[in-house]
Image 1 (cartoon, rainbow, N blue to C red):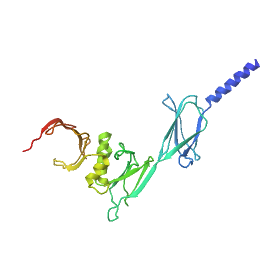
Image 2: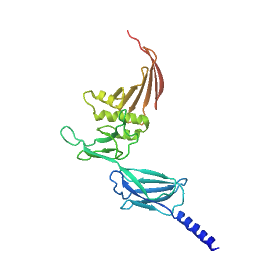
Image 3: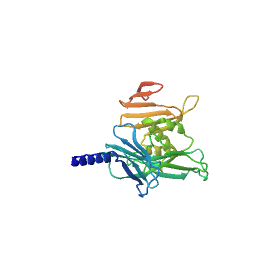
Image 4: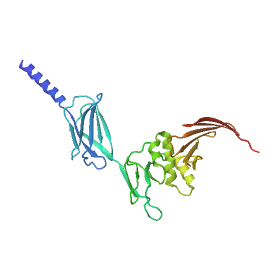
Length: 288
């Protein structure tokens, strides 16, 4: 009888130990190993909507969430100017070590040829891909672009590790950049930012731009209406017969697409789709 009571007591204590288990650990900077304070740690049990724990690390980078029931958990660690980390745990582990990578910061000044600050200029960070043309962030976040200060100074932050091109624009519609969105907006934004960047040497501005973003055509012109709005047209020859183009006013929320197919030397079919009109044109060209 006494032996049975001891076994039951041991099982009870073991169960109590499981229920009292938790998740604890330490968050450090990946590059230096230094502890990170005030890191937001969110712990959620898989399959449940509410958080099991929501806390911050102390001055030594430590955190502890006690009294968690057995199960599978997800741990998210986040801190401004660091790349967040997510762990998925199949069971309650021992002490964890979470390493966060610090984001990059780029600072500088925008000055004119006389060394004076260019007030009103906007500076963007464009990540350099391993291959292909430069492309801006499809959804720019605070820190990846900024207006210059009164001395022309700027600070770009919250940038993941990598290589970047710094692009400066002046007088362009940054509101259009911010509201463009989607693949077509990203393409338009890329063309406009590259246009004002003036990168490259030994070629005309148009050649610099087309070589930078992989386009075959770029034009900026005034519209035919009374408002004389600025219209940007970009295009790409995707094959010997097919050409795709996009045209948009900087003040508009959407533009129009053109798809051109050269059926024969003198005969071309052009389709156009946009907010205001959809059309198919059959173009016959002759010479005399």
